[in-house]
Amino acid sequence: MNGWSALDRFLQTDPRDVGCAEAMELLHVYAELAAADASAAERYPGIAAHLQACGPCGQDFDGLLAAMRGAAD
Amino acid sequence: MMPGDAAVDGITPPAGFDTDSATWVRSLAGPAEQREAALARLHEMLLRIAHSELRRRSGQLRITGPELDDLAYQAAADALLAIMAKVGQFRGESRFTTWAYKFVIFEVSAKAGRHFWANPPVPMDAEDWDRLPDRFGLEPAREAERRELARAVRRAVDEQLTPRQRQVFVAIVLDGVPLDALAVRLGSTRNALYKTMFDARRKLRAALAANGYLDDQISRRS
Image (cartoon, rainbow over all chains, first blue to last red; front, side, top):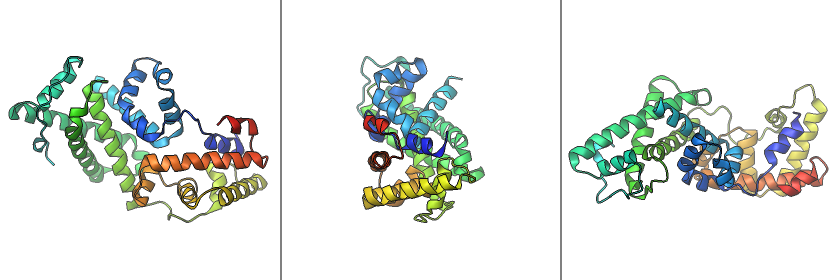
């Protein structure tokens, strides 16, 4: 990937993106769905779009999944 | 706050809760002895997760040893406070523990954002546009392309963004300030700054597409 395509990817926005507040509000519900099967993104496309674009929320999501896995171990 | 300081009164879990979640909610609202035991157990869980989450992020945070322990303890204590304040709002849409873990993960993020300013890698508002091509992986050898990219983006930033959007773009993209750290510095929130950047990204993309630098078709879709 060259610099322009990386810039292009960074600048692209998804109109379905719900923003941090709504994603954080439902993150526990989304995480359990995501851990159980692949239907989370279908049921909550706006959260899926947000987690792909927002580094901090994506990191929180990964952390929550790791915590769930750790508790299950 | 110590685990035993928090209290919730009069909370009865609805019938739809899973058994474990119902037990948690009932215990946290129960008689003092039962509540104290539940709080201590919850605090222990939160502390363990705060530790593991801080370790997971340690590459970015540059935190180790006693400082990491201290941040983990603060995150667990603040998460416990938040959970006890909101346990009446828990609706059983997930397991209680998943809902509770979310609070400590958010606290770790907030603490990491504040910690960033203890030793920031670059001064804020440095506005060094020569760094921009590096952010998008353009090799130093491609000098002409680097100059063109920096010039085009800077022009779009100057012409299209509001002063606030420009401030947030420069801090995040040029200075590499994490969103949560920037929220601390500007007295804002992650959500508000994300929205500011979302609008800035859309405007910049449209401008760069209009000037022939990016594919216009994708621009219309986004």
